[in-house]
Image 1 (cartoon, rainbow, N blue to C red):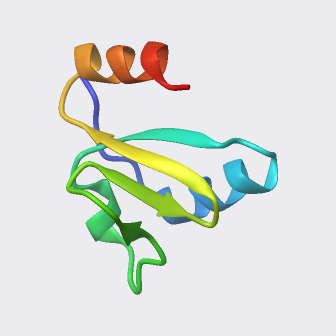
Image 2 (cartoon, rainbow, N blue to C red):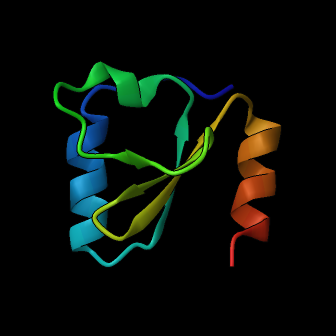
Length: 70
């Protein structure tokens, strides 16, 4: 099960600072932040200061994304 966690924006900013290029987050968690800096290019893939952020609905989908990301 994937669940929404508090502070997703802050966590993404820290992951970006540490050099991560990809992130997988539960669907709907990005709408919780105020003034989201995320740019939506397509319905599932977003960009956050150079990071690619993918929203998922299930653990199966998260694993598929994690193991197929370039």
